[in-house]
Image (tube, rainbow, N blue to C red; front, side, top):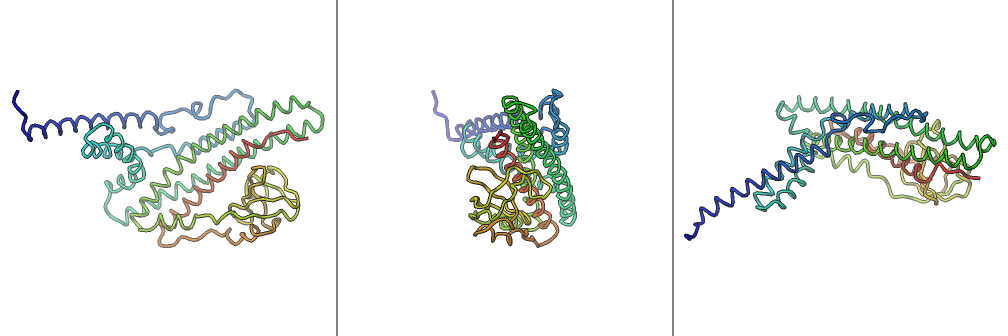
Length: 349
């Protein structure tokens, strides 16, 4: 049997590489589109939040949250699919095997997801002024939508707390017995945990879009991501002592429902400032907001950190900063509500 020359071997290797690359791209992109497709495009409301059994008085608020949050599930994967395809091709070329192609696909997806928005814009126009105007408009639109989603989430979480408080009041007034109260609170707890899961999915979609906006802003105003990260870095956690009886609220808002109450002398950890409120964690793991004015110790001196840092450097950079601030505040709301769902909604006394 004659030996194959180097040229023939190289041709055969290249042929196998192209087959591997095409296979990897097909498998990865197909998998991505099937498992990670935008919920707003290929799902129903019932599949996202579950069917309505007619027993949940907070259901309208959950529907409102899904309706506003579903906006963020659209037009996210274009860049990821394109990036996965490019990464798979590179992995196949350099690794010359399926494993390398799949690794390259995964890496490309991560990069492509953030870069896809900017790449798509550049296909439409190369004029920097036009691109800046488009990005500014898109970020502004997202900011409005995040505000709507935040409000819907606030109303939903407030409704859950009101449900739990009504059950506790009925128990304290002896209108229901303890087993009934415990059972009803368990139902509220399960609903609240589901709400947090819905919120967490929306949060992930908001994060994806925000990453794409920051990538675009970096192209238009280099250094935007660094400025945003610097401005949004929270200070180190600090201990504080409750100086006088104070509420622990679900949100940094006087009108927000109380999660629990803090007694004078209680030890808490201040993790962040929101206006005149501190986000604190108690020794038992409960999280919520309490006024700085009711705290003493190192953490009470963090009120000066409440003022958000202004990100200058142009309209796109400023808008990217405001988008990141809204994104992080929504994420914080979801985290607090998730913690409340895990540790709260119990019957005391």
